[in-house]
Image (spheres, one colour):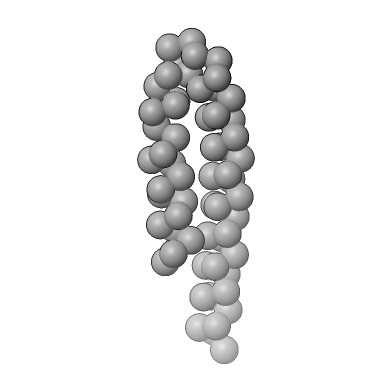
Amino acid sequence: MEEYEHLKALVEAAAEDVAKAQGGNKAAGTRVRKSMQDIKNAAQDVRKKILEIRSSESH
């Protein structure tokens, strides 16, 4: 599922900045917060797609 693959890519891309943010890098922390918002939106897209699949199967 394309939406899920996109979500996984976003999480993997944020890993380096998460490590930097834990080390005290404030700019990395800002990037992580933005990435988390993108991840939240991507997760919502996955939820919608799953509901579409479920709805199409029940009909």
